[in-house]
Length: 324
Image 1 (cartoon, rainbow, N blue to C red):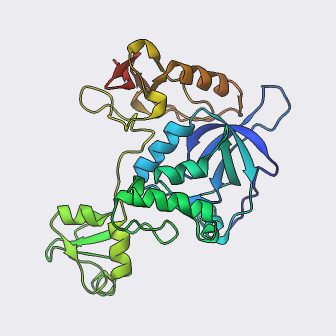
Image 2 (cartoon, helix red, strand yellow):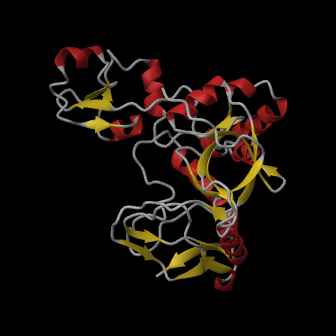
């Protein structure tokens, strides 16, 4: 496997322009004015103390949304840290280009993820009493992913496509199942499931020959294909913007406190109709200032018909939200 050379070799600052496939990996643009002579790079930095569920794992959408709400458009400080083997392996799979700790003001983001219950302490750091205390407190309060009975640790979870037998009403643990290998899943009819909940809702039961305890736990810990949290701005559904979990940056009491957020630089807008985002005015002003400092080269975006939905920001149920 080709090893990517980390871009962050010394402590530096950056602007968060997105989130990777998990809340513990942030897409960052370097800070610098055009023409400053600085390298025009963006990079994906993975935290080294904690690990959040990956997209398609149970609770991944919620944890990703937390990261967007906490970090998008913020200027951060990055402290490079050599990753453990577990983190390095996940990072290699996800094309991570930098590892370390991320600080926003006086707060460390890995600690905020732990407090909110959206990450585990990585195996190599589980002797750190302070980090384990944060994880234990979130678990006791059933915050975030700990609302589930038995969440699967990200270093144990893997994406599995479960094959449904339409005649026997059972599902198999992928193409490695002995029964599937022997029969080539002739009765599967192309039916696929991505979580235990999805298969159960369809009336299917685990196949006893191949769905062992490990696969059952992975199936239970999978979330299936859901709405991408950034696109949970998403394609318009129904007559209004999608309902998002309450966030501090959107907290409001009146329409006058809200504004639409700026377009994120260094990224490509989605095709089709996409809802704008809204936040408190002081947050929007900070995002505009920070995005203006994002130093990145030209982004080659596909040519497609995109349309942003939302012409103003209003306060609804104590949260800033876009409106037609």
